[in-house]
Image 1 (tube, rainbow, N blue to C red):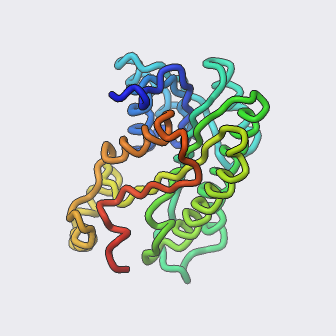
Image 2: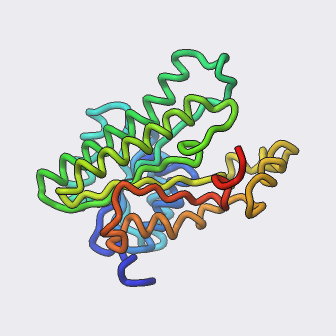
Length: 255
């Protein structure tokens, strides 16, 4: 590994850490040398992930966090900081979606998606930024966006709207916090195959979607590693306010 991509001495907090991508991000950051704070709403899967990581000699601490609750976010940061010291890499990965046509989306469903994806990302970014500014330390915050923050698709209005807002929030925070040495960038995956969506992509509709991707394949979680480690490490020290799209060229195809 190029030395600039090494994360030894860094402390990384990952929200939604027990999910498919969150667990992969955690392992990738850990293998690069970071101590990990695994954050999520349910403790048991976080503990299971932590045990698996420890078997690979990756240091990690599971902590409960509800990203929509400021007190919960604050407490999780405090717990992680008490264990490992200043948190200088943050991955805002927690997110949800509602798959319904726009006229069928209920008000509480809209609110829940926006609450988790946008407000949750903001609360985590704000807590991280506040602590870094007070400590006069640099850091890297990575929001997990989506190609649907750049383009649209049917039946996912709350999700695509919230991810577009996350992209704009990322740029606004990058502008405001650059003077403090805090970098804020977005990673925007395309369609990544996981256990949760594998069955869909074996259907006719799923196969048709794959054919609209210029590379004619789904992404794999490891396809995100290059961008993730670039943004988390000092190799991207002159990058802030950027959004890296990893989608097999899907964004370049026609809507």
